[in-house]
Image (cartoon, rainbow, N blue to C red; front, side, top):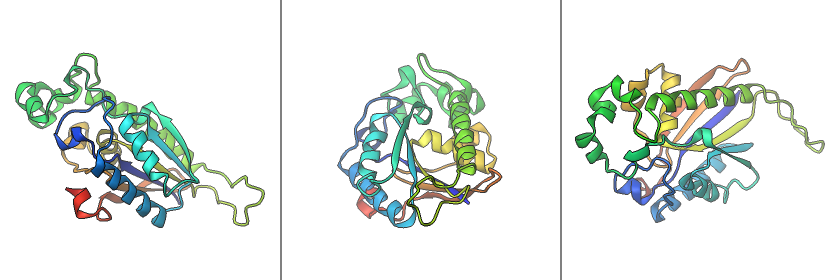
Length: 228
């Protein structure tokens, strides 16, 4: 059984202010760095991470840097495929202004038409769904096909299929993965999942490439201050 551990980045001031970040280069705030360190300690204690795949946006690269304080042996690959949705001209708006002023882009208000609506210069939720679905399918295939460890000094070679990969991403992409695993449509994927900063989702992958949801949006390892 292989494993994919998906985690959301730590908190930023934009998160705290309920602003749409998209691809903005928003850094972690102090609470976000504390969350990421707590997450790293939890992951290191529970999993044997072989490699890290991370979004290349600033808040995920900073989260990855904090995680590697506890996971220094894992190689890191940064990938645009795991970025948050590009909100285009909507970037920087508060969620309240989005819902009240642009209901055509609010899935909770407008349903499927909002999921396929593409803001100027940005992506629709459907675009993100397809982008992440493709990246997820590729990653699951890689984990299922993981071969024997090539280290000649290894005394316990890794069996095929038991690779453990940590994915450091954003709310949108992780919503997509959970939605795929639960059989949700694109609207349910956005509207029915609650995912906090540094929450962790674990997926098992068998040798046939069949993924199974093991943990969903877990965050009990974060202290009360980091969770607020």
